[in-house]
Length: 394
Ligand code: NI
Image (cartoon, rainbow, N blue to C red; front, side):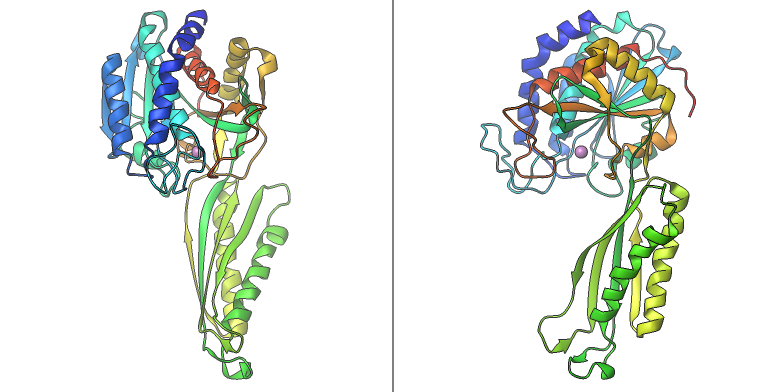
């Protein structure tokens, strides 16, 4: 443990420089070509063998003593968001309209730092560490699903996988964990309402699409409030309604969008049917033609309870009990969920807040982190990679 801490301190400035390079050169989901090359070059430099998969994904392997005895996978995501950066820092994004506003630059550099540490200490731990650098966390179908399809979880199959996310409301130097349900599934809803446009003063000669759309917005809420078990976390929000252009014309089409989230796969797909039923009912009562498309996104994220409990104990030993807390339940989504559906998984949070920086929420143009978090992140990742040997089953 002490060696890991010492190396994390020693490599800190170098890893911060990598983070700044990645931050200045962000790439959108599935276009992480330069980022991927950067990762590959670093692994080469550290002497770590790797494979490229899913176009820009990279999987590195570090074999310790008796490499077949256990495999831990450590995962980082590499993509940025279509946001114009507003931070005035020397390492601000050089790519117009693209920004690492979710901290994936931190995740990638933290995993590179951890890789360097683990490679150096490979004669001091048993088993194999698999490094997974994945594309496209921010966009369907989710880079994790492509990495799994491409075989990232095979040869060898990891006994456990860890991922972290920067957390802007958690103080730097601290971590949080949560076993069981952790984040929601997220499906995109697209609804088109078609009717007969016409004069607003003669609605009886039209099929009123605005009225039908309004019925849908209101009625869909009963799927959550009346059909779902109140103890089952779920939320549905209609986030866009577009139709019409003036005061005296009923438009012939209204388009709507929204999101549906859940923490239970069975309820999730039953709710999809209920959403379609509501639209069918409104279609019958209004005469409008209603088309529903649900784009199925990430599943819900479940942290293996025993693995997470073991990891939390390891984290407390590494960072002190006072620096490890319980993550609050959230309805956000994260494609790490795909790994959690396959093998024992634990997704934890890395504190990035300090008093001066304040809380810088992700997915905003002024998101940023306390860069000390990078040292704490690579230390913890390396520690979990070297020390977690939980014999849990999915
Ligand atoms: Ni993210």
